[in-house]
Image (cartoon, rainbow, N blue to C red):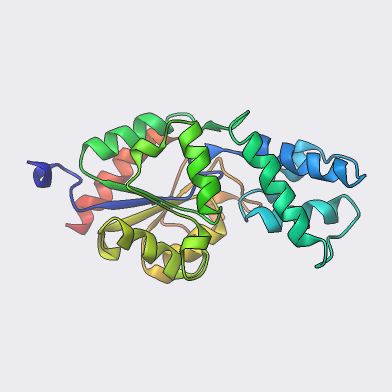
Length: 231
């Protein structure tokens, strides 16, 4: 019966930060903790929000630069390690799924789609976040940059994630929020749905994705329309 479900054979890969979950509050809180420990002033939320989504090291580099104390190569490993420890301690203190996320995932999964997470966040941090928010149950695989040959926008990250759930690139969709996600999709020849509420400096509709949605309530219709066209 399962192979008769309307979305059987479809793999949907999701970015995590800025796509599934609004993680900026806890990431910025962790960054500001590390800055304070180094004798620097905290950064305003609105100034830092769009720095989120590129990984811990990039966030620290941009954050320290914005605080007027560029991070040198000698200090970076220690501070990345400290940041990860702080972040793990508060990983879902303020982070929440975006509106409509859980209902959309539950419906897609119930209709036969294989769901997976393809994120430049470290796998362990991603799994800890999903566990804390009771989202792990909805995904068949979580592949962070440390579990892929190279991080997004390299096609191999997305292709590795699709393969991890037994999917095929020609029957897959990526949902993301950034130019990194769009690049990964284009490089892997996988269509990309861009969410408009994520962490991107350029407007979502200018990133070059195949379609933009403003709410997760729209995703089911987009997926079914693509399935109909692909068929």
